[in-house]
Amino acid sequence: MQKRLLYSTAVLAALALGSCSNDETLNGGLPETTGASQVIEISVANAGSGLTTRAGRPLLSSEAKQTIENVKIIICDKDGNIKADTLITDWMTNSQEYNDAGHGRKVRFTLGSGSNAKLAGTVGGTKYTIYAFGYHGKDSGSPYDSQYTAGTSNAALNKYLKTVGNGQKWDNEQKKAVDDNTEAVKTFSENFTIKNTSDDNAEELFAGSAEITVDEKGNFRQGITLHRQVAGMFTYAYNVPYFSDAKYLKVYASQENQALVLGSFYSKVLGSNGTGNVLENVVNGTDTQNTETLLYQIDLDQWFTNIVDVNNDGIIDTYGYTDAGGSWTENKGSVNWKKPSSFNNVTLVKGSVFGGEFLIPFKAKTRTQTLTLELTNESGTTLRTWTVKLPTDQVISSGTLTSWNGTSGSGSWSTDNSVTESQEAYSILRNHLYGIGKKTAEGDGSDKEDPDPDGPDNPQDLNTKQEIQLQVNDNWEVIHQMVVD
Image 1: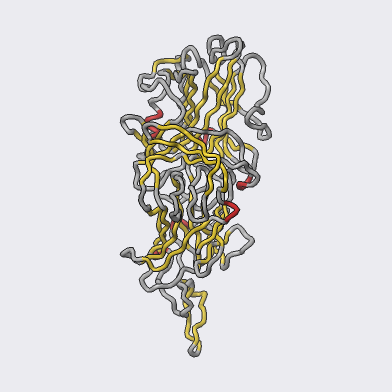
Image 2: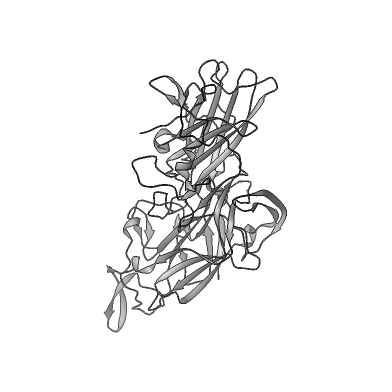
């Protein structure tokens, strides 16, 4: 376990990870302390798991999880000068769950332990802003770097944020703050932009901020909740139509964004499974590529031993069949469906397929279908197409939509208060999970014979027209219901 804590001589003399009971509340519910104290609690709200071979977490269901490695905290004065910064590595080891059914993980710490060791305050209060980011990328012991880049050098995000600070770190042996010449970036501000330079879709990322006011005694207590800054989508389907040359199920988007703007934050605890939340319709993507984009594809050869339809029902066979006097009888002792090794610990309905990715949010494209599902052969010829729709009660109708207007280099936030989208053309929003089919938990790896319409594991039937449900995990903002044609 490695922990790197950075300090300013005049600002931070000590930073200790504080323990707290599971029943303590967040965001203003921090316990009373004696004397002038400066207590910060960083809470990272949970996210869904996912599908990838990279270090970032894959998307396997809407189950609440998180596996980020790092959380960076930056404290700035009103002019953006960095007054304190902290990098918590090995987040999953150094944090603890807070008591809300696995709602997230948190760390609490105190700034300062002696005179001249705290953020300076004045009569009437001195204002500061705390920024916090949760992200992937190992400091050492792993070749993996975040796929996001930042700064003029386009360094990997985890490497770039190590250069951000006030040039001090705490030396445990000397028991004092010492110079850290690796911290070359001394100012910071909201609307921090990062680019996605990978050919993959987005990687999971959390962020948040809060303003604090320090009085003349140096008091403040502040909780900050970090929320997911990307969207997500998965396809969980069964009864895949049979074509002799069927090869891929592909999900296409009308366009894509290649950068994320980390700003227009909110710091609140969301309701369980996306219910009872006041929705925040935010598109924080930028650098738009105005072309149809393949989000992800499912290789059917990884899920079926053979692409066959022995009983001629128009569906790729899950089981083998035996000839019973001229009629075909299903033989469950001979299984044509296979589960890829990466899904060994995931419960799936036999005959189903699964794929998913995190996405950078983007705005609706006028009069253009936002998401499309296609069944293709290996050369890309379309064999069947499904349009993926939002149900009418989940479409933004005369509602608000906050978005970034500009590029990754410059721009500003704007909020339109009279947005009306359609079932076909809808924005992909920050912290929303869009799912074809229903899968609320990864399970224990056991396979189920049939989907249960009322259960947690109900894949989309691709042989009929029916609703598809967009699930949001324990801290996604909203659970969507969608339909396909």
